[in-house]
Length: 127
Length: 220
Image (cartoon, rainbow over the protein chains, first blue to last red):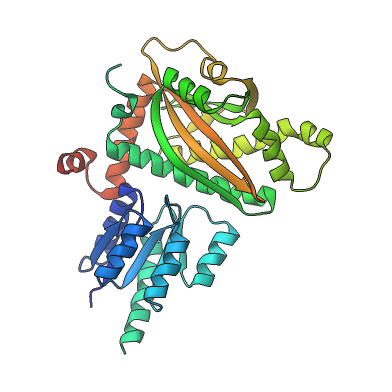
């Protein structure tokens, strides 16, 4: 079963790097890209997707605020917030919102673990 | 030098450099949190490449008061000077934010130099170490030194190299315990260092995306 991943990051390079990792892990998955929270929310209202990968540090609303808004739209969606800023408060807020915290720079192993768990959750929801 | 300095890096090279600096600053926020014992908000809303005179102009335009800077020299494949700059009035705010308690002014003044050097050391080292590690090069860094003066003093610490140089200029917002302190990070590099940096950024882009920087530029 292939799914659609939304990648939100203000850095084009970071989006390309996440896309490369996704292609290596799940070449059959498709993806959507946005460079800020507003763009992501407007895309989320128009297009269906299954999993989201959000940068924390973005101009305008940060990844945690975006995560909360996306989860308000789709409460059961697997979602990760990515940042090099692993302060307790940031990691804790991600958990409270219901998002997974991943460390930046994102590596393939960490993305793999998150996506495996996401697949498990999506299959459970489908069953 | 031809064209604006920002043209010296392609859009993707500047994007990559901004991303590296953001990772460095985010890591610094996590380290500073350990030191301060309270959440530290650090963000870099803007990164640009400026000439030395334009960088002095920006600072002179925005900041009328005296400035204080933490200065470190870096050497390696890419060499230059890194500066964390605050308006002098904000530097005592920074110490208050970091120490947290209600220390008397004399203690704050006494601690200022040390707190500035330590904060600067964490921030500048984190940025430079992240850039170096991700570009797979090593950089040697000098000990932090606190300087006072104005933009012209900081950016003219040595005579400008004959070939000219550029300043990577970052606005940085720092907030801790409801105190907001805006400052700047400046990295001054000569043109051979910038050429080396461009090459290393292209290699990094290739590793990160699996594509050559040129093939991406051609497509966009």
